[in-house]
View 1 (cartoon, rainbow, N blue to C red):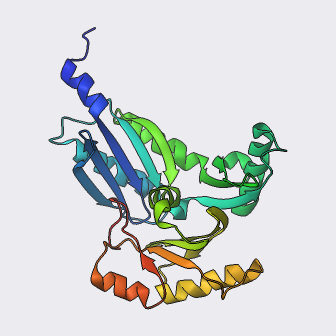
View 2: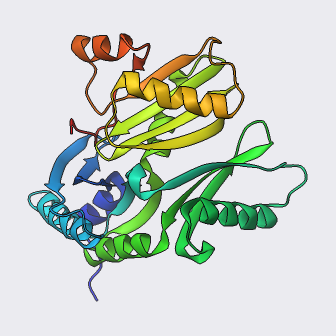
View 3: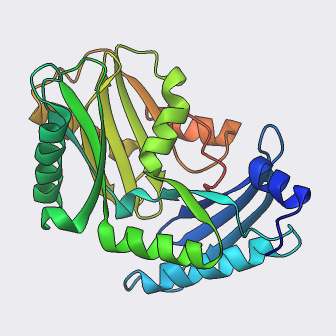
Length: 272
């Protein structure tokens, strides 16, 4: 059996793939170099909304196209970002000092299954303690969808390194912008908007709004969540929004009229 060349070994160290699985398109980026700039970005439309098969077919086409002229992608690692329409999020109240991790995992899995209306075994659940130690922020992806994504990527010789929901990826990238004591953060995409309410740097509540609503309409949804929680809707709040559009004077003016501050979208986002 022949050993891989030094060029192949170096490529596996310096290059990786990022796959974004949306609801209207799949985006595959080949990243390389010290700062991992995008060497190739391929967008493939999802041709049907009926089930995951069309999503997987678009993923196949995107990876095949990204492989052309890039030395191939076989042997590279892949980070997967899944659109929030495929994901369930929730904030689960737990005391980090009182609940051991194994018990916490069971409680969180049961809670997200109740939210999604499916058996716990149908979901792949990831979670992390919040910084105040009084709860966990959790996400769940359908286990069948996750298994099929992994299988398709492995068929192309890719090794899945991580899978995360789009809101988590965007939230982690924008946390330095969240300087207010109370923050509302919204990620707007074609299928809907993921909203989170934060106070003192901790996510307190989440909500997914179906459809692409405008900035003014989203304020109404946020206000409804706050009132349901008994919060003061007149208090000072920092409103941040990722509309999926690049930062521009026109885009800033559009959202600022409704009281929002615009943040730049991630590389995989597109105007939809």
